[in-house]
Image 1 (cartoon, rainbow, N blue to C red):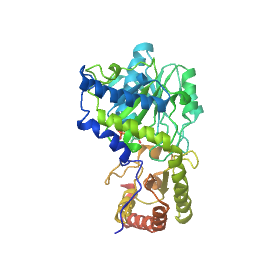
Image 2 (cartoon, rainbow, N blue to C red):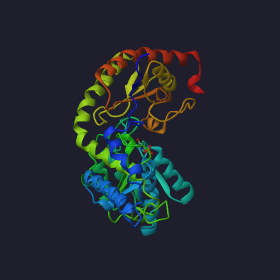
Image 3 (cartoon, protein in one colour):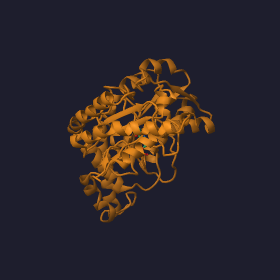
Image 4 (cartoon, rainbow, N blue to C red):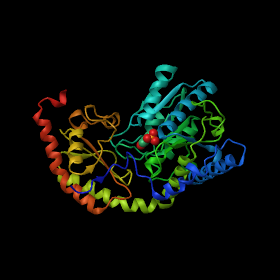
Length: 394
Ligand SMILES: *Cc1c(COP(=O)(O)O)cnc(C)c1O
C-alpha cells in the first residue's frame, strides 16, 4: 500500500521541527522552576516571560493578559466557569448564552454550570451554514446574561463566525464575550483588539505546536474565578508550576503561524476548493456542510445521504486516507454530532458526515488520489447501510 495520507489536521497537527528545536533546551538544560528565586529559576522565568511576550505580540494584547493552560479545553473551561462565577458574584447575572455548534469543551462546561451551579443556559441558534447571526444574538441577550460564548471557526464544518460584530453587540450591553479560537488560530487573524473579545481560547496542537498546552487571553479588568487553586502562578488565575517546554513550543508555533499564515492559506485554499468542487460534482446526494465561502482555508466537509460516516472512515482508512467524521465520535456511536445536528440535517443525512482537513504536507497529488477514490467508497458505504435494513432507525 502507498504511504497513508493524513487529511485530519483539524484533529491535530504534527509538531513543526522548528518548534521542537525551540523546546528541546527547556527539557533538561534550562529546567528550573520559574517561581524559584535563584538563577535556575530566573532562567526558566525568562523563557516563560519571553513566550508570554511573543504570544501577547501576536494577539495584540499585554503579556499579563495571557494565561497559560494545559490545553484548548482547559482554556474554554477557565473562560466559561471562571467568568460565569465572577460575573454572577459581581452583578447577579446568571444566564450563559452559547451557540449550538460549540465544541464540547464549551457545551459540557455550560451544561455542568447549569446542572450543578444554578446557571441558566440558552442556546443560540445557528443558520443552515452553521453561522451565528448577529440578529440571533441581539434577540437572545437579556438583563440576566452574564456571558456569551461563540467559537471563531467551527472544527466540524469549518464555518467562520462574525466574531467582531458579535463581540461589539456584547460590549454595548456590557456582557462578557468569549470565543473559542482553538481551530481558527491556525488560519485566521487573532488580533484581540480588532476582534473586541474579552476572552479567547487557544490550543497549540492545532497549529503545529505540542499537545497538552493552551492559552487564554483575558482582557484586563475581566473578573475570573480560578478553577485550579494553589500557588500564585499565572497572576493567581491558574495554579501549578508552568510547563516551560510546552509553553515555549506554543509561543514558537503561534509566532510561525502568524508569520506564515498567508502562505499556508494560499497553499491550501485551491486544494480545498478542488476537493469541494469535485466531490459535489461527482458524488450524487452529497452536500457541503458549513459555509461555502466563510470557511477555514484547509477545511472541506460533507454530508452524504444514506451513508454511515463511520463505515466510510474505515473504508477510507483501508484505502490509505486518514479523515474524520467531523467529531471525535468513535466507531459504534451511531449518533450524529450535536454540531452537525445544529445545521438542521435530518437523520438520513446527518449520519453520513465526512471531514477532510488539509495541512502543511498536503499536495495536489494527494488531493487528486483522494477525489478519484472517494466516489467508489461512498457508494460502498451506502451499500453497507442497505445491507442492514432499518440500520438508520436503530
Ligand atoms: C481541538 C479543539 C478544542 C480542544 O482543544 P484541546 O487542546 O484538544 O483540548 C476546543 N475547541 C475547538 C474548536 C477545537 O477544535
